[in-house]
Length: 468
Image 1 (tube, helix red, strand yellow):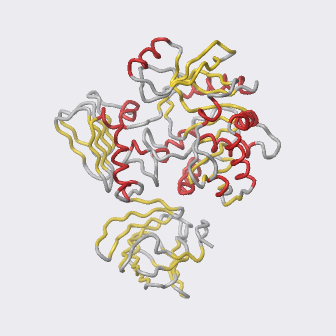
Image 2 (cartoon, rainbow, N blue to C red):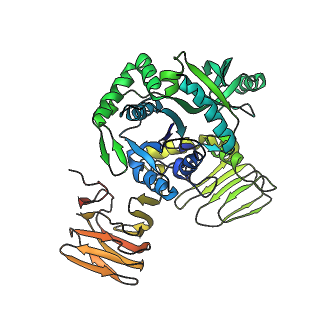
């Protein structure tokens, strides 16, 4: 069995925690580990090959770093040049899986789901594996505990071995219809998790959507490996239609079966869902961070970097990040994506960027800015090095707070330690490296006529970011 973890998506309903450059699957929302790390960890106890990941190009270093932190092996990280939904993404994984003549079962999982009962999850997967070995395309149906209008449903048909024949897939219902579905016992929430042989999926995809099959086949014929990453032909993949696996295959195949899963599942599709799965106090409040509350009930608070105080409120969502504050009624929190749409229409960076930005070498936090200046706090991981680069429009001043920096400026090289500083003039070719065993922390003061991140000309880069 080869787990295929889908780690794309932007999670706009959880803004401002989740943003385009750092979406919810990379966040810690229900424990010390991120959602991606939890997805990989819950595979422990199943017999499987190292997982294969599929993510967006811009998230590649975040995904690789989180897998490294977890200390698990992987079978490669596929980079989608553009998002094309789940049917093409799974096709890439399937083509890769059969490349050397093998035909594993693909366990397709989303990286941003919560599952509380790992034992029940394993039991459902093991039941499904028997069906998948027979050539069935298995989907997992969540045993619903309430009428939910935010999910699609799967109607089960006659019993088949350890599961049920899929009678039909049903779109998101209204409340009355959802109540009927739950009461009947014949309907499950559609989890978006699957198990099938790689060859069976490709055969059904070729039968029902040959356009997707051919585009993905062409894309993977021209592939390249770069560090942990697997890249495919961009032009071929861009030409691929955008389609979900449900619409492309599962709704058409005659071999779809559903295996029930009752494992405390949630797709954390919004703040109301996050509140439901969070640990709450005696007043129904779920607090993260430095929070003080008086006469507050059934409220979710995320405080990132400052004290959040509430008095006399109920059923609210309050999220404080370094550069944005969200206040919403819990029952209306699914409309947060409308705020993101407004921000995108105004071309505001808060739609996609956090103030703290992660890079393969570490991270930086833009702590202040004004006309012709910007101040960043930079953290460089041990052994990491920023690209050899230059800027046309800005000079930089680096002050080391802790650790030791190895600094290259044109043809000179020097070590800069705590409480020392160095100046990099405009157009000087420079590089920054952490030769030590602990994080290097420094303050960078930029000054100049233009301070955008696109004013970087890279000459060398160990992370493959030099454009030819």
